[in-house]
Amino acid sequence: MKSRIIGTGSYTPEKVLTNYDLEKIVDTNHDWIVTRTGIEERHIAAEGEFTSDLAAIAAKRALDAAGLSAEEIDLIVVGTITGDYPWPATACVVQAKLGAKNAYAYDVSAACSGFLFALANADDYLIAGRGKKALVIGAETFSRSLDWTDRNTCVLFGDGAGAVVLEAQDGDAGVLASHLHTDGNHIELLYQPGFGAVYPASAEGLEKRLPYLKMQGNEVYKFAVRMMTEVSKAVLKEQGFRCADVDLFIPHQANIRILEATAKRLKLTDDQCFINVQKYGNTSAATIPIAIDEAQREGRLKEGNLLLLAAFGGGFTWGGTLVRW
Ligand SMILES: CC(C)(COP(=O)(O)OP(=O)(O)OC[C@H]1O[C@@H](n2cnc3c(N)ncnc32)[C@H](O)[C@@H]1OP(=O)(O)O)[C@@H](O)C(=O)NCCC(=O)NCCS
Image (cartoon, rainbow, N blue to C red):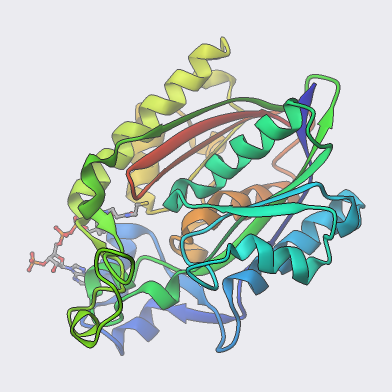
């Protein structure tokens, strides 16, 4: 028995913010952003458009692709750190918007690794026989957690959502293995300090820009490349594969230099790697499911293909997942 991906969907908001648009907001320029990150544009949610809206559209598209109705879903897990409310979970809002009345729903908070952590959760649930079908979603509206006066961070992120429908099936296709890791000793290298219990909401905190993402980019870069490389090697080795066996590598789309450095260390060719960071920026937990959906629609995923997924994010959290398509 395996958890097989039987439908994919994605959604990015209509509004596109280019690097040239950003030049008018902060002291930056298109060439700097492209050279350092590979990002050319990102999508930004409209006023009144929330993470649950993006997630519900992506999920509906995945359900349609799978030929299922929302009532047939037993579990919804949403990977997000930019949910509609501090609580309850955005997954609850998504459940209501979809009318998935037979599903229980919760969020997974693992930053940019959120989708892989959520996928492993749903896989465990299906393999344990607790349900037959699950929706796994990665969705973010990072534009609302960014300090738009900080050029070090605001140019890197975007909004979007991706979703997959998983079904417990007999056979060889499905999730083969997931390796998940956390090292909580580096929280301040990539986090949102306020407004949780440590820094509750206050005017002073707002002045200090506490409710926005803070990052030490250089340090994060080094960890991201090292951990995504190590976890990819480990999950392949456990399953008896080599890098050359990978048909498609879909890494978390944080930044082109992280992706290229990781692919180089894994000795993967360009043809083995899927990259779309130029169009969306870093959409955190949404990058991998958006990329899976695009790869599927572009015909780059064929039955029997070996798919390697790798992510890294705040926490630090990281993971590697192997899927037989
Ligand atoms: C953020 C990142 C692109 C910065 O690139 P870098 O080569 O490390 O650049 P530095 O931080 O050393 O900054 C170099 C200079 O560019 C400047 N700079 C930073 N952002 C800029 C921007 N948007 N436009 C123009 N200049 C910018 C800095 O102020 C610095 O100037 P200084 O030398 O006068 O102080 C890079 O560190 C990175 O990709 N980190 C990983 C980030 C990430 O993906 N995080 C999410 C992981 S899930």
